[in-house]
Image (tube, rainbow, N blue to C red; front, side):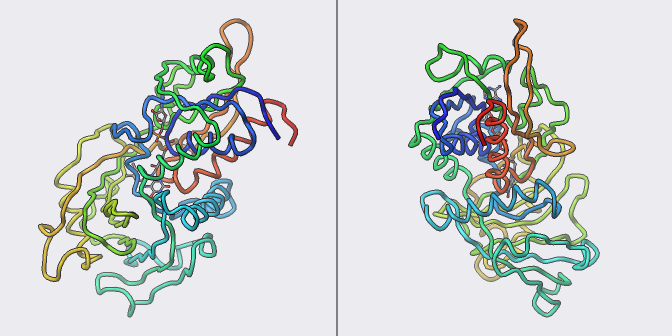
Amino acid sequence: MTVESKTVVIGAGVLGLTTALQLARKGFKSVTVIAQYLPGDDHPDYTSIWAGADYVPVSQGGTEEAQWDVEGWQELSKVAKDNPEAGVWFQDRTGYYRNEDRTQESFNIWWRDVVHGFRYLGKEEVPDFADWGTFYRTLSLDPSTYLLYLQSQCLALGVAVRRATIAHIREAFSHDGAGTTAADIVVNCSGLWASKLGGVMDERVVPMRGQLVIVENESHGIFFYSGDGTFQKEIGECSYIINRPAGRGTGLGGSSYISWDREPDMDLAERIMRRSIKICPQLVPEGSGIEALRVIRHQVGLRPVRIGGPRVESELLPDGHGGELRVVHCYGAGGFGFQSSYGMANKAVTLVEEALGLPK
Ligand SMILES: Cc1cc2nc3c(=O)[nH]c(=O)nc-3n(C[C@H](O)[C@H](O)[C@H](O)COP(=O)(O)OP(=O)(O)OC[C@H]3O[C@@H](n4cnc5c(N)ncnc54)[C@H](O)[C@@H]3O)c2cc1C
Protein backbone atom coordinates (compact mmCIF):
# COMPACT_ATOMS: atom_id res chain seq x y z
CA MET A 1 0.00 0.00 0.00
CA THR A 2 1.21 3.53 -0.77
CA VAL A 3 0.02 6.39 1.40
CA GLU A 4 0.34 9.89 -0.03
CA SER A 5 -0.69 11.74 3.16
CA LYS A 6 1.98 14.08 4.51
CA THR A 7 3.15 13.06 7.98
CA VAL A 8 5.45 15.01 10.28
CA VAL A 9 7.10 13.34 13.27
CA ILE A 10 8.36 15.64 16.02
CA GLY A 11 11.47 14.13 17.61
CA ALA A 12 14.53 12.14 16.57
CA GLY A 13 14.94 10.13 19.76
CA VAL A 14 14.39 6.39 19.68
CA LEU A 15 10.60 6.86 19.55
CA GLY A 16 10.51 9.46 16.79
CA LEU A 17 12.92 7.59 14.53
CA THR A 18 11.28 4.20 15.12
CA THR A 19 7.85 5.68 14.40
CA ALA A 20 9.11 7.33 11.20
CA LEU A 21 10.72 4.03 10.15
CA GLN A 22 7.55 2.02 10.77
CA LEU A 23 5.47 4.59 8.84
CA ALA A 24 7.86 4.38 5.89
CA ARG A 25 7.79 0.57 6.00
CA LYS A 26 3.98 0.76 5.87
CA GLY A 27 4.14 2.70 2.60
CA PHE A 28 3.90 6.31 3.82
CA LYS A 29 5.64 8.24 1.05
CA SER A 30 5.95 11.64 2.74
CA VAL A 31 7.36 11.36 6.24
CA THR A 32 9.42 14.22 7.72
CA VAL A 33 11.19 14.04 11.06
CA ILE A 34 11.78 17.44 12.65
CA ALA A 35 13.86 17.74 15.80
CA GLN A 36 15.95 20.12 17.82
CA TYR A 37 18.50 17.31 18.45
CA LEU A 38 19.48 14.68 15.91
CA PRO A 39 21.63 11.50 15.96
CA GLY A 40 25.26 12.51 16.43
CA ASP A 41 24.37 15.32 18.88
CA ASP A 42 25.34 14.95 22.53
CA HIS A 43 23.18 17.54 24.25
CA PRO A 44 22.12 16.73 27.86
CA ASP A 45 18.45 17.22 26.87
CA TYR A 46 18.56 14.50 24.19
CA THR A 47 17.53 11.61 26.46
CA SER A 48 17.99 8.68 24.10
CA ILE A 49 21.76 8.96 23.84
CA TRP A 50 22.18 8.76 27.64
CA ALA A 51 20.40 5.42 28.10
CA GLY A 52 22.07 2.24 29.52
CA ALA A 53 20.69 0.39 27.59
CA ASP A 54 19.45 -3.17 27.91
CA TYR A 55 16.28 -5.23 27.50
CA VAL A 56 14.70 -5.98 30.89
CA PRO A 57 10.91 -5.46 30.91
CA VAL A 58 9.42 -3.61 33.88
CA SER A 59 5.83 -3.97 32.62
CA GLN A 60 3.13 -6.09 34.27
CA GLY A 61 2.11 -9.26 32.42
CA GLY A 62 -1.11 -9.04 30.40
CA THR A 63 -0.94 -5.27 29.90
CA GLU A 64 -0.54 -3.27 26.69
CA GLU A 65 2.93 -2.26 27.90
CA ALA A 66 3.90 -5.94 28.14
CA GLN A 67 2.78 -6.36 24.52
CA TRP A 68 5.00 -3.41 23.54
CA ASP A 69 7.93 -5.17 25.22
CA VAL A 70 7.25 -8.37 23.27
CA GLU A 71 7.18 -6.42 19.98
CA GLY A 72 10.40 -4.70 21.04
CA TRP A 73 12.14 -8.03 21.58
CA GLN A 74 10.95 -9.42 18.26
CA GLU A 75 12.36 -6.50 16.27
CA LEU A 76 15.49 -5.75 18.29
CA SER A 77 16.60 -9.40 18.39
CA LYS A 78 16.24 -9.51 14.58
CA VAL A 79 18.40 -6.38 14.35
CA ALA A 80 21.02 -7.97 16.65
CA LYS A 81 21.17 -11.05 14.40
CA ASP A 82 21.07 -9.36 10.99
CA ASN A 83 22.63 -5.91 11.43
CA PRO A 84 25.91 -5.91 13.38
CA GLU A 85 26.37 -2.23 12.41
CA ALA A 86 23.28 -1.28 14.46
CA GLY A 87 25.02 -1.47 17.86
CA VAL A 88 22.68 -4.10 19.34
CA TRP A 89 23.95 -7.44 20.65
CA PHE A 90 23.04 -10.41 22.81
CA GLN A 91 24.60 -10.56 26.29
CA ASP A 92 24.30 -12.86 29.30
CA ARG A 93 22.67 -11.09 32.25
CA THR A 94 23.30 -12.13 35.85
CA GLY A 95 21.21 -10.64 38.66
CA TYR A 96 22.07 -10.95 42.37
CA TYR A 97 19.34 -10.44 44.99
CA ARG A 98 19.14 -10.26 48.78
CA ASN A 99 15.90 -11.56 50.29
CA GLU A 100 15.45 -8.33 52.22
CA ASP A 101 15.32 -6.41 48.90
CA ARG A 102 13.26 -8.91 46.94
CA THR A 103 12.24 -12.54 47.39
CA GLN A 104 12.19 -15.01 44.55
CA GLU A 105 8.48 -15.68 45.23
CA SER A 106 7.61 -11.98 44.71
CA PHE A 107 9.39 -11.93 41.37
CA ASN A 108 6.65 -12.35 38.76
CA ILE A 109 8.58 -12.62 35.51
CA TRP A 110 6.02 -12.94 32.69
CA TRP A 111 8.82 -12.45 30.12
CA ARG A 112 10.93 -15.47 31.13
CA ASP A 113 10.11 -17.16 27.80
CA VAL A 114 10.75 -14.00 25.77
CA VAL A 115 14.44 -13.73 26.68
CA HIS A 116 16.71 -16.77 26.21
CA GLY A 117 17.50 -19.45 28.79
CA PHE A 118 15.98 -17.83 31.86
CA ARG A 119 16.77 -19.63 35.12
CA TYR A 120 17.00 -18.86 38.82
CA LEU A 121 20.34 -19.16 40.63
CA GLY A 122 20.38 -20.82 44.05
CA LYS A 123 22.37 -19.67 47.10
CA GLU A 124 25.28 -21.91 46.10
CA GLU A 125 25.54 -20.21 42.67
CA VAL A 126 25.70 -16.58 43.84
CA PRO A 127 28.41 -14.67 45.78
CA ASP A 128 28.19 -14.51 49.61
CA PHE A 129 26.57 -11.07 49.55
CA ALA A 130 23.44 -12.38 47.74
CA ASP A 131 20.73 -14.95 48.59
CA TRP A 132 19.62 -15.91 45.09
CA GLY A 133 19.91 -14.78 41.50
CA THR A 134 18.71 -14.86 37.91
CA PHE A 135 20.53 -15.68 34.70
CA TYR A 136 19.39 -15.26 31.08
CA ARG A 137 20.51 -14.02 27.69
CA THR A 138 19.09 -10.68 26.64
CA LEU A 139 19.97 -7.63 24.50
CA SER A 140 22.06 -4.58 25.18
CA LEU A 141 22.81 -1.71 22.84
CA ASP A 142 24.87 1.41 22.35
CA PRO A 143 22.27 4.19 22.06
CA SER A 144 24.32 6.55 19.84
CA THR A 145 25.19 3.82 17.33
CA TYR A 146 21.62 2.56 17.31
CA LEU A 147 20.13 6.03 16.70
CA LEU A 148 22.46 6.59 13.74
CA TYR A 149 21.42 3.17 12.42
CA LEU A 150 17.72 4.03 12.79
CA GLN A 151 18.26 7.34 11.02
CA SER A 152 20.08 5.63 8.13
CA GLN A 153 17.21 3.11 7.79
CA CYS A 154 14.74 6.01 7.67
CA LEU A 155 16.76 7.92 5.05
CA ALA A 156 17.06 4.78 2.90
CA LEU A 157 13.25 4.61 2.77
CA GLY A 158 12.87 8.25 1.78
CA VAL A 159 12.12 9.80 5.17
CA ALA A 160 13.25 13.44 5.34
CA VAL A 161 15.11 14.58 8.46
CA ARG A 162 15.23 18.29 9.29
CA ARG A 163 16.55 20.23 12.24
CA ALA A 164 13.92 22.57 13.64
CA THR A 165 12.82 23.70 17.08
CA ILE A 166 9.16 24.46 17.54
CA ALA A 167 7.44 26.29 20.37
CA HIS A 168 3.89 25.09 19.61
CA ILE A 169 2.73 21.79 18.12
CA ARG A 170 0.76 23.69 15.45
CA GLU A 171 4.09 24.83 13.92
CA ALA A 172 4.90 21.22 13.03
CA PHE A 173 2.12 21.21 10.43
CA SER A 174 4.11 23.53 8.16
CA HIS A 175 7.22 21.27 8.18
CA ASP A 176 6.05 18.76 5.59
CA GLY A 177 9.37 18.45 3.76
CA ALA A 178 8.70 20.90 0.96
CA GLY A 179 8.01 23.54 3.59
CA THR A 180 4.96 24.80 1.74
CA THR A 181 1.90 22.57 2.13
CA ALA A 182 0.39 21.74 5.51
CA ALA A 183 0.95 18.23 6.85
CA ASP A 184 -2.09 15.96 7.15
CA ILE A 185 -1.06 14.63 10.54
CA VAL A 186 1.66 15.15 13.17
CA VAL A 187 3.08 12.48 15.47
CA ASN A 188 4.41 13.97 18.69
CA CYS A 189 7.49 12.07 19.95
CA SER A 190 8.98 14.94 21.94
CA GLY A 191 9.82 12.85 25.03
CA LEU A 192 10.39 14.87 28.19
CA TRP A 193 9.73 18.07 26.25
CA ALA A 194 6.04 17.20 25.90
CA SER A 195 5.94 18.91 29.30
CA LYS A 196 6.98 22.23 27.70
CA LEU A 197 5.68 22.06 24.11
CA GLY A 198 2.89 24.57 23.40
CA GLY A 199 -0.45 22.87 22.73
CA VAL A 200 0.64 19.82 24.76
CA MET A 201 2.20 21.03 28.06
CA ASP A 202 1.69 17.63 29.72
CA GLU A 203 2.20 18.19 33.46
CA ARG A 204 2.31 14.46 34.09
CA VAL A 205 5.70 14.18 32.32
CA VAL A 206 8.61 14.45 34.78
CA PRO A 207 12.43 14.09 34.50
CA MET A 208 13.62 10.87 36.18
CA ARG A 209 17.34 11.52 36.55
CA GLY A 210 19.74 8.64 35.89
CA GLN A 211 23.52 8.72 36.22
CA LEU A 212 26.09 6.43 34.59
CA VAL A 213 29.86 6.09 34.50
CA ILE A 214 31.06 4.85 31.10
CA VAL A 215 34.37 2.96 31.32
CA GLU A 216 36.73 1.33 28.86
CA ASN A 217 36.92 -1.84 30.98
CA GLU A 218 34.94 -4.81 29.70
CA SER A 219 32.47 -6.63 31.95
CA HIS A 220 31.72 -9.41 29.41
CA GLY A 221 28.05 -9.47 30.31
CA ILE A 222 25.32 -7.55 32.10
CA PHE A 223 25.16 -7.58 35.91
CA PHE A 224 22.65 -6.33 38.49
CA TYR A 225 22.66 -6.19 42.29
CA SER A 226 19.59 -5.45 44.42
CA GLY A 227 21.28 -3.73 47.40
CA ASP A 228 23.82 -3.88 50.21
CA GLY A 229 22.41 -1.57 52.87
CA THR A 230 24.31 1.48 51.55
CA PHE A 231 22.03 2.33 48.60
CA GLN A 232 20.47 5.76 49.11
CA LYS A 233 16.77 5.10 48.63
CA GLU A 234 15.83 8.79 48.23
CA ILE A 235 17.74 8.92 44.93
CA GLY A 236 16.72 5.42 43.85
CA GLU A 237 20.26 4.04 43.86
CA CYS A 238 20.74 0.74 42.13
CA SER A 239 23.72 -1.19 40.82
CA TYR A 240 23.98 -2.41 37.25
CA ILE A 241 26.61 -2.94 34.59
CA ILE A 242 25.90 -3.05 30.87
CA ASN A 243 28.58 -4.00 28.38
CA ARG A 244 28.04 -2.23 25.03
CA PRO A 245 28.95 -3.58 21.61
CA ALA A 246 31.80 -2.59 19.28
CA GLY A 247 34.13 -0.93 21.78
CA ARG A 248 31.51 1.52 23.00
CA GLY A 249 32.47 0.90 26.64
CA THR A 250 30.66 -0.44 29.67
CA GLY A 251 27.94 1.53 31.44
CA LEU A 252 27.95 1.45 35.27
CA GLY A 253 24.78 2.66 37.00
CA GLY A 254 22.80 4.09 38.52
CA SER A 255 20.09 6.14 40.13
CA SER A 256 16.49 7.17 39.56
CA TYR A 257 14.80 10.23 41.05
CA ILE A 258 12.92 13.29 39.88
CA SER A 259 15.30 16.16 39.15
CA TRP A 260 16.23 18.49 36.29
CA ASP A 261 19.90 18.48 37.41
CA ARG A 262 22.16 17.40 34.51
CA GLU A 263 25.47 17.64 36.45
CA PRO A 264 27.07 14.33 37.49
CA ASP A 265 27.21 13.78 41.27
CA MET A 266 30.80 12.61 41.83
CA ASP A 267 30.08 11.02 45.25
CA LEU A 268 27.40 8.92 43.61
CA ALA A 269 29.83 8.09 40.79
CA GLU A 270 32.34 6.74 43.30
CA ARG A 271 29.69 4.57 45.02
CA ILE A 272 28.61 3.28 41.58
CA MET A 273 32.19 2.33 40.69
CA ARG A 274 32.89 0.59 44.03
CA ARG A 275 29.70 -1.48 43.79
CA SER A 276 30.44 -2.38 40.18
CA ILE A 277 33.77 -3.93 41.12
CA LYS A 278 32.08 -5.84 43.93
CA ILE A 279 29.48 -7.48 41.68
CA CYS A 280 31.77 -7.85 38.67
CA PRO A 281 35.38 -8.28 39.91
CA GLN A 282 36.58 -9.14 36.38
CA LEU A 283 36.12 -5.46 35.43
CA VAL A 284 39.58 -4.75 36.89
CA PRO A 285 42.81 -6.79 37.32
CA GLU A 286 42.73 -9.01 40.42
CA GLY A 287 43.28 -7.04 43.64
CA SER A 288 42.74 -3.63 41.98
CA GLY A 289 40.25 -0.97 43.04
CA ILE A 290 38.36 1.75 41.21
CA GLU A 291 41.66 3.39 40.18
CA ALA A 292 41.86 0.61 37.58
CA LEU A 293 38.63 1.75 35.93
CA ARG A 294 39.44 3.83 32.84
CA VAL A 295 36.62 6.38 32.79
CA ILE A 296 35.46 7.56 29.35
CA ARG A 297 32.88 9.94 30.83
CA HIS A 298 30.36 10.58 33.60
CA GLN A 299 26.88 11.19 32.25
CA VAL A 300 23.36 12.10 33.33
CA GLY A 301 20.13 11.51 31.44
CA LEU A 302 16.57 12.52 32.23
CA ARG A 303 14.12 9.68 31.60
CA PRO A 304 10.77 10.99 30.32
CA VAL A 305 8.51 9.38 32.92
CA ARG A 306 4.81 10.06 32.54
CA ILE A 307 2.84 9.58 35.77
CA GLY A 308 0.17 6.98 34.96
CA GLY A 309 2.08 5.57 31.96
CA PRO A 310 3.11 6.53 28.42
CA ARG A 311 0.73 8.48 26.19
CA VAL A 312 0.09 6.84 22.84
CA GLU A 313 -3.22 8.29 21.69
CA SER A 314 -4.93 10.46 19.07
CA GLU A 315 -6.09 13.98 19.62
CA LEU A 316 -7.86 16.61 17.52
CA LEU A 317 -6.47 20.06 18.22
CA PRO A 318 -8.14 23.35 17.23
CA ASP A 319 -6.23 24.93 14.32
CA GLY A 320 -7.06 28.47 15.45
CA HIS A 321 -9.28 29.05 12.39
CA GLY A 322 -12.32 26.97 13.34
CA GLY A 323 -10.88 23.70 12.01
CA GLU A 324 -9.07 20.76 13.57
CA LEU A 325 -5.57 19.32 13.35
CA ARG A 326 -4.89 15.59 13.60
CA VAL A 327 -2.21 14.64 16.16
CA VAL A 328 -1.00 11.30 17.49
CA HIS A 329 1.04 11.44 20.69
CA CYS A 330 3.77 8.90 21.43
CA TYR A 331 5.83 9.88 24.47
CA GLY A 332 6.45 9.21 28.15
CA ALA A 333 8.47 5.98 27.82
CA GLY A 334 10.36 6.54 31.10
CA GLY A 335 13.19 4.03 31.54
CA PHE A 336 12.01 1.62 28.83
CA GLY A 337 11.96 3.63 25.59
CA PHE A 338 14.34 1.34 23.70
CA GLN A 339 12.79 -1.97 24.68
CA SER A 340 9.24 -0.78 24.02
CA SER A 341 10.13 1.39 21.00
CA TYR A 342 8.68 -0.85 18.29
CA GLY A 343 5.53 -1.61 20.29
CA MET A 344 4.81 2.07 20.97
CA ALA A 345 5.70 3.05 17.40
CA ASN A 346 3.46 0.33 15.93
CA LYS A 347 0.54 1.58 17.99
CA ALA A 348 1.23 5.17 16.89
CA VAL A 349 1.21 4.01 13.23
CA THR A 350 -2.15 2.27 13.73
CA LEU A 351 -3.56 5.46 15.26
CA VAL A 352 -2.25 7.50 12.31
CA GLU A 353 -3.95 5.09 9.87
CA GLU A 354 -7.21 5.33 11.82
CA ALA A 355 -7.06 9.13 12.05
CA LEU A 356 -6.53 9.35 8.27
CA GLY A 357 -9.36 6.89 7.64
CA LEU A 358 -7.09 4.42 5.83
CA PRO A 359 -8.33 0.85 5.27
CA LYS A 360 -7.04 -1.70 7.79
C1 LIG B 1 20.25 6.60 32.59
C2 LIG B 1 19.20 6.04 31.66
C3 LIG B 1 19.15 4.67 31.44
C4 LIG B 1 18.20 4.13 30.58
N1 LIG B 1 18.22 2.78 30.36
C5 LIG B 1 17.31 2.25 29.50
C6 LIG B 1 17.35 0.84 29.22
O1 LIG B 1 18.20 0.11 29.73
N2 LIG B 1 16.42 0.34 28.35
C7 LIG B 1 15.47 1.14 27.75
O2 LIG B 1 14.67 0.64 26.98
N3 LIG B 1 15.42 2.47 28.01
C8 LIG B 1 16.31 3.04 28.87
N4 LIG B 1 16.25 4.38 29.15
C9 LIG B 1 15.09 5.15 28.70
C10 LIG B 1 15.21 5.69 27.29
O3 LIG B 1 16.46 6.32 27.11
C11 LIG B 1 14.06 6.67 27.03
O4 LIG B 1 12.81 6.10 27.34
C12 LIG B 1 14.04 7.09 25.56
O5 LIG B 1 15.31 7.50 25.16
C13 LIG B 1 13.03 8.20 25.31
O6 LIG B 1 13.11 8.49 23.93
P1 LIG B 1 12.24 9.62 23.26
O7 LIG B 1 12.39 9.44 21.81
O8 LIG B 1 10.87 9.63 23.85
O9 LIG B 1 12.90 11.01 23.78
P2 LIG B 1 14.25 11.78 23.35
O10 LIG B 1 15.35 10.85 23.09
O11 LIG B 1 14.48 12.84 24.38
O12 LIG B 1 13.88 12.47 21.99
C14 LIG B 1 13.03 13.59 21.95
C15 LIG B 1 13.21 14.26 20.61
O13 LIG B 1 12.24 15.28 20.48
C16 LIG B 1 12.89 16.48 20.08
N5 LIG B 1 12.10 17.60 20.58
C17 LIG B 1 11.52 17.76 21.78
N6 LIG B 1 10.88 18.93 21.85
C18 LIG B 1 11.06 19.54 20.66
C19 LIG B 1 10.66 20.79 20.12
N7 LIG B 1 9.90 21.66 20.82
N8 LIG B 1 11.04 21.10 18.84
C20 LIG B 1 11.79 20.25 18.11
N9 LIG B 1 12.21 19.05 18.60
C21 LIG B 1 11.84 18.69 19.85
C22 LIG B 1 14.27 16.39 20.71
O14 LIG B 1 15.18 17.27 20.10
C23 LIG B 1 14.57 14.91 20.43
O15 LIG B 1 15.03 14.76 19.11
C24 LIG B 1 17.23 4.96 29.97
C25 LIG B 1 17.31 6.34 30.15
C26 LIG B 1 18.29 6.88 30.99
C27 LIG B 1 18.36 8.37 31.15
